Each structure stands twice: as structure tokens, then as C-alpha cells.
Length: 150
Image (cartoon, rainbow, N blue to C red; front, side, top):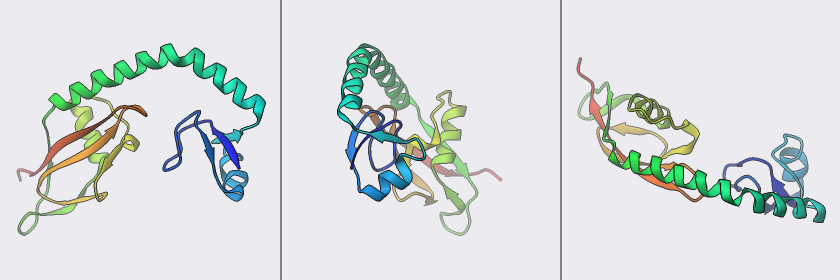
């Protein structure tokens, strides 16, 4: 079943992509929840026209995303966390904690665009997170997990 995505769908595609999925997934989930519409020939023509009109605006969005990426590369973030025996953390550090640390540093990034390798960090040290700012712009963001001062 060929569908046109109306919004980004994790592990499938981005908004306005034409994707092929199994019939049940499209009919029972994507279409009823408003994530996609059927890719008929007329819908494809409308999509092509919209993409052509949006190309200029898209370039400005990509340029803005590149500026944010450069600003993120200049940041040095340390996330303080309580530490137990050795260098093990009480709890863990994940994308929500990174989003909060970036917010404090002046960069507002939604947590769903931040991916930490392995999902959760449970030890002190230096790590990197992948931050997707746009479908074509993503940046590897280095950060450090340090012990909180008691």
C-alpha cells in the first residue's frame, strides 16, 4: 500500500514522503490516526506542486538548522547526577535530561529529536547524542555526565 505521510513517523519516514507499507499498518493505524493519506495519482500531483512551492522556504529552514547545529557544537554541557559506589549513577541520564540541559544553555530542542546511543546512560563519563534538527541536518552532540555536588 502506497501512502503519503502527513507528519514524521518514527522508523518510517518524514512528512510528505511517499512510503510503501503493509496494508494492515496503513489501513488500521496510519490513515485513521491522520499520519498518512492514500497516494493516489491526484494526491501525488498535489504533493509535487506543494513541494515545488515549498522548496525556497525549505532552504531557509535548512540554513536555520545549520546555524543551530553550529551553536550546539560550540556548547559544552555537563549533566550532574547523583552517584553511588564507583561511577554508577542513581537512576540514569536520557534524552529528557539532555533536552533540559540544552534548555538551560539557551538551545530549545524537543526531546523526541534527541537520540542517546543505548537509550539510557548509567555511568559517569563522556558521551555523544545524535540530535536531528531537520531531515537533512543532524549533529553529534558531545556531553559529559559528572557527579553532583552533595
